[in-house]
Length: 352
Figure 1 (cartoon, rainbow, N blue to C red):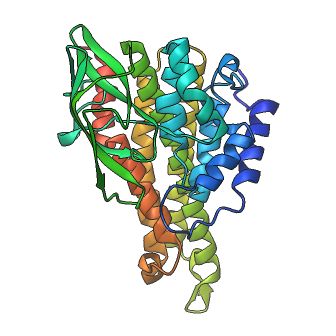
Figure 2: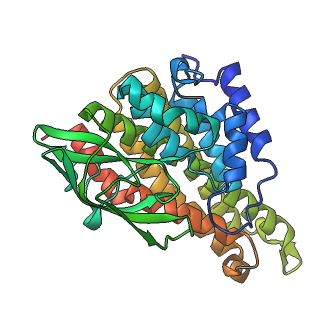
């Protein structure tokens, strides 16, 4: 088997690198509409959408390649949640009218979609407390990225017959947005649903697809974040001297850097394995949970080690490293943490 990227996939990655090259990681947190529009003009935002919806017809692998570069550059755009968690299920399970209403603006980079996957008390995203009763939604979704900037949000909920994915306009009656402060400063809001009527309700398969695509895209983002954090740490320890020698020549430092490299390679390989399974149409619950575990666990170790290896400079907010640390924690929390992913993996391996 050949697991190398295709020429088309490498071209996608190279284009993402080019488009994000001038992003300033030190810029204030917030939604970068200029970069979002640039990605839309270049066709990046439609990569993983069907050609009938103005996309290129690629899969989650191509999306993950873009997300890795988004993480590396700390680009302030919602690639993972908008393109994976929201657009993908709408494109594959939504009606023609819904797709025509929501996808053209997204593809063009003039609008945003988002996903509401988190609830209070760490509820499983695919076993939500939010309910769809009598055609109306009731519940609370926490830390929804760019909720105030989004046109619509996809909401996993339990209906009379089980799990569904409801598509709700953010300005619809019964929707209240309460801004919240996040770890990385990323704009987000709690979404309170009190009788909000969805514009369309998608089946359980759409919710599973949205969750899995979001997870893989976030894992790829974490790979980019961790890779850049390690690069900064390697650069610092190679140039900073102690006792007349570069820090990197000390065994303890070299081993710490080596462990970071191993963690990143584990994150990378499990992410691409999960992406391959999804694009090949194979059952992917185990692979997705494994990728999420490594993204949460490995990402936390790499980010923490990078800060530690910088000494006091690592926590100096005038130095840029802390931004990758905070972004890494944001992804870790968005994934639900490593322990939750081990629970999901156990459920996939030994179904109830």
